[in-house]
Length: 54
Image (cartoon, rainbow, N blue to C red; front, side, top):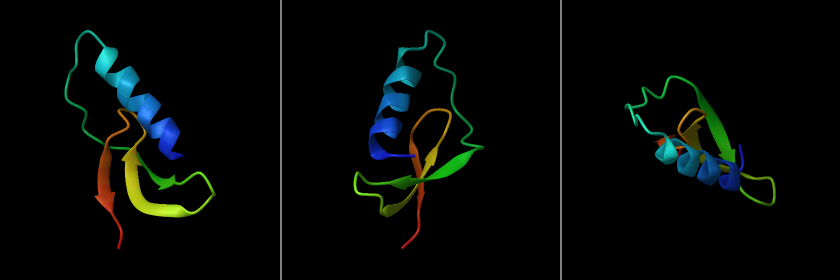
């Protein structure tokens, strides 16, 4: 998932009327615009950064 995709997911999630808390059960590694991993894992449901691999 790219950084832009994660940002779009966060916006979409916040637009939902019910705004129930996300359990962050499905994660994907984030990639920057040039194709390098950022080391951050993003929830594919809400777009929030959940974990960082150093």
